[in-house]
Length: 105
Image (cartoon, rainbow, N blue to C red):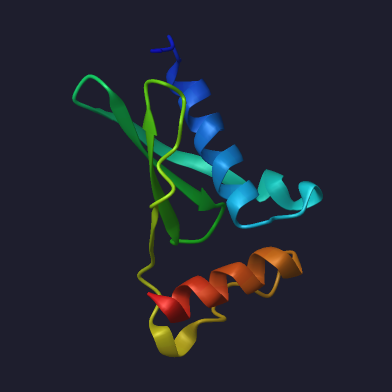
């Protein structure tokens, strides 16, 4: 069933899916924001989600059904040898996820 989702709703679904999948504590979820949402064809959107102030991002697909593809990707220009760059002021759970993502890419 197709839903009539706004760009804002699509972004919110992407963030909700990502923070649930990453097991981010409820109190830390406001650190995540939608960077871009762009339609691809007529049935899905690509959504980039990031943490404010950092160049890292997760790229997710949100379908017109409202479902998110569980195979999202992580992208970061941060050098693997500098995995803790910019993380010192973040909540521990987010800093740990970013450091892990930066190492594993």
